[in-house]
Amino acid sequence: MSTENPAPRKLRVATVSLAGCFGCHMSFLDIDERLFELIEHVEFDRSPLTDIKTVGPCDIGLVEGGLCNAENVEVLRAFRANCRVLVAVGACAITGGLPALRNHLDVGDMLQAVYGTVPDDPELPLPLNKVHPIHEVVHIDHALPGCPPSADAFWQFLQDLIAGREPNLSHGLIRYD
Ligand code: SF4
Picture 1: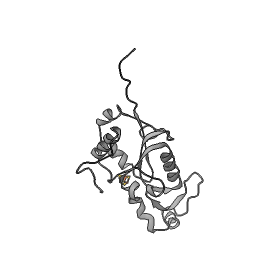
Picture 2: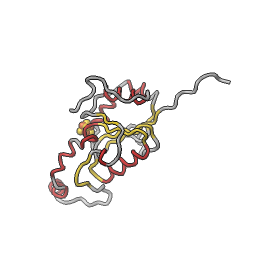
Picture 3: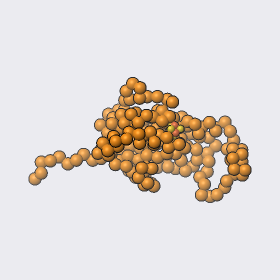
Picture 4: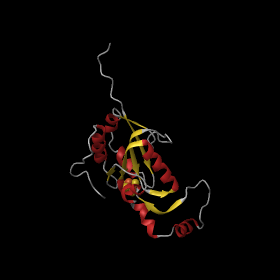
């Protein structure tokens, strides 16, 4: 009988960009060669990194962006239902961010001004009247601030979660710009 311990199970991680600019995902990828170390410990579920389209049972869900349309809400609810730990990543997910600048304007007027009509293709998701931060719709377990959070902040945050610690960003890694 082998005395070797089986390799620990990899944590399953899903990521998504809702009403965001993908800047948070780009910053995450800036961990560069540390990605190789990361995938020793995690495997990716739904994510722009995998092209998996629907989220399955996961340990960690990283959500970039707030909620600007009905599809965002549906995807967010699926993440909450499937992810043991849900993280609001970046200013847009935490506060609505830049997209929420439209909140003092009328959606119909905006669409009219931009497109000259109100687009009504049934394939298009229904816009919400206001852009919402994700905590207004689902419970979140952690917030990783920044626009975007730095690669080092992503790295430390994920290291803490992988080790089963409460995330605790050291000095200089928490920022709100
Ligand atoms: Fe883009 Fe900043 Fe929003 Fe991240 S927080 S999605 S970088 S605008």
